Each structure stands twice: as C-alpha cells, then as structure tokens.
Length: 230
Image 1: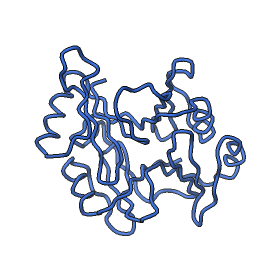
Image 2: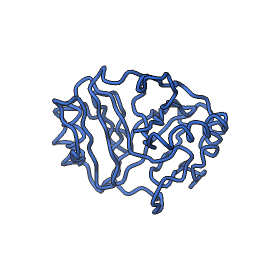
Image 3: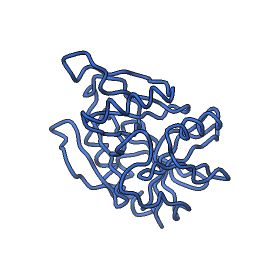
Image 4: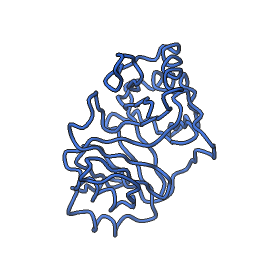
C-alpha cells in the first residue's frame, strides 16, 4: 500500500508558496503536483471537485471493499473508489502504485518539525476503527474505552483518531500532526511567525501560564497542521 495526503487549493501559486516557505520539497509540478517534507507525501490538487483526504494505493481493493462495505458507503468513481469514515474524511482507494516516493530521510525536512501522522476527530470511534483496520491499518496504541486510538499501515503512516469533544481547540479533519517536544516547539512556532505563515489558532490550554506553546495552521485549501509540543 502507498499513502498520499490530498489537499485541495483555490490558488495553486499560493499553495506552492505556502509549502516552499515551510521548506517542503517540490517533487512534481506537472500533471500531479506533489510536495514532501521527507516523511509525508502531499498532492496539491487544483481540481474543483478535490477534497482534503487520503489516497491509498494497492494492486486491488475488491476484497477490502467487500469487507468494509457494512461500515462505509463506498462509491465507484471513474478511476478509484471513494468512501468517508465517521470523521468525515474522504478516502480514495486507487488500484495501482503511486508514481513518486518521498525518499528516505531520518527526520522531516520542513520547518514544522517531527511529523507523527494524521489526526482525526470522529463521532463514532468504533466504526472509524472498523473502517481503518479494514483498510489495512493496525492498532499501535490507545483504545476505544480511552477515547483515542492510533493505527499504522505498512507505509508507516499513523492515523490517530480521537472521540468527539476530546480536544479543547479547533479541529480540522484531517490534520497533519507534528510533535516537537517542550524545548523545540516554541522555537518552531517562532520560525513560523518569522516566515509570516498565518496562525489559525494559538493554544494556551495545556499550560498554567497562558503561554502559546502549541499552534494550528492551515494551508490555502484548508488542510490543518497541528504544531504541538507532545
């Protein structure tokens, strides 16, 4: 399986400028616009019908579709299958292999720091788990009783799913999560400010001194980024 995060855009130049300022590597600007921070591959899709979500590639999805059909409404499109989990995230199932790789890097290349995966907030944690495990993701931590769970596929892509009303801040499904530790995150936040990247929310709820130690930003298409200290 291969995984790509898709982000739409109202303005391709603005989106490319956003990712270039954050030091993502531009891999392709023809046919398919791809950028990478060395750990995650994103497709910037200017098509007016594009939606933020995940593209999963595999030789065949037929068996999987039959298996998860009870938990998701699956639509057959011209070149893929489309479904939505209870978080509202669009999942595109494409038969074949993706044409680009992120390369092999020990750490993320971007200003954002340490990429840890995709975060979702779901109204039905059990059903979301059934969808993602049906797609080949395996639980690595958490539980439905705890109100959160993290799963991983063979690409090493992590999906963290939180029960609704778990997070005391804005939440955009899906959001990419970067964990940088209490020492480094303030420095990364300052870098983002210096680059004049608009901050969607400054978060102070997790400390007692009212310090902005976590932030959320969004790209021009609305894809969320959690820049958190842990």
